[in-house]
Image 1: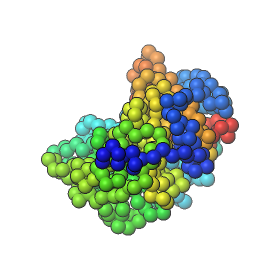
Image 2: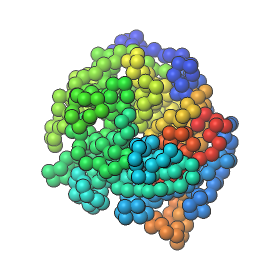
Image 3: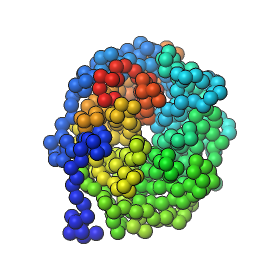
Image 4: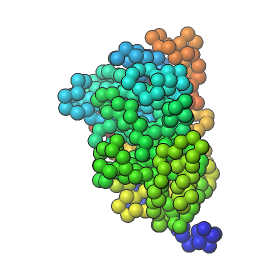
Length: 455
């Protein structure tokens, strides 16, 4: 595509909050992204301050006044099923349990949590996919009325680098392997489905693609699954299942195109609109070692290239997609794909690290705000994004384990304040926000006066 064609093809949109929610409002505020300034704290919630954990008594997080939290599922903690909690907590989703669930009740939420373990030291329970692989998922039940953790168990094992994924409308979690490792005769790089109230059968969905998966978002109207790839170049993929809600029965994998392609989005800034998008079929979604990769197949047919696509989230017929290191400053982009209009645009590109430092996982609150997990350098924050498009730090990682450790915990002493946030998600009632600190591996349940602000 020539520079003249590109200028004709792209345009800058004036996007109001009413047109697309908080990310669109942020776009309107930052038409000149160089002038964007992050608030030091939320004007509604107030400044961050150290808050003691109800479980250990340590000040592990900084939160606004009135907010509290309960830590759980530390790496090495014994789960209800007797197994130790795996390390490297990552993506999560929250579910309202089905009728008859043994820990059920009107106030129970079940989390499915990924573990981004990449080594081959052995699977931690059977059945599993690869007996030598240490990654997988665990499930946790939480009583939102009492603020109490009820149970936890291993639900998928024998996988590698389970980074993110996404919930399905039919009540399961799609766990994604962020790798293309081949261990002997066993290939990795697949999507696995995990029930929220049981244990996965550990069957890879090979027709959904073998690549360095990150996250997925499912359109409940069609059952189509939108998949991101954590690589550079990476593609945005769409899986059209043969049977809606039955991903194991196979389907067609496609890659997004922009214009007549191939097209590179790396430097596109806030307000860039792509009015012409399409999809090309990936002929071999499960390439073996030495064969043409999925992304190479797509680019050869005109597919669009992105820089490290990570978080994805479905909300009101739109899919929000995060490029961790895209944009003019290389500090991250957030794309919006409008499913109704079949259009995509860059709603926000961070102008520098002081505004947003490599965003990763993303979720939308029941009140219309957005939580962005930060995966950059230095102090790590959960950022809030108001419905008016204002960005602010909501929570800061303050995890420091003192000499001598923590009673009852196997986590070694150390300063973990530089570890990334991941897996942020609200329970269905909106009263609790769950999030992970990846290292040393801790899950937090955060509650407080949410209605004072957008989150």
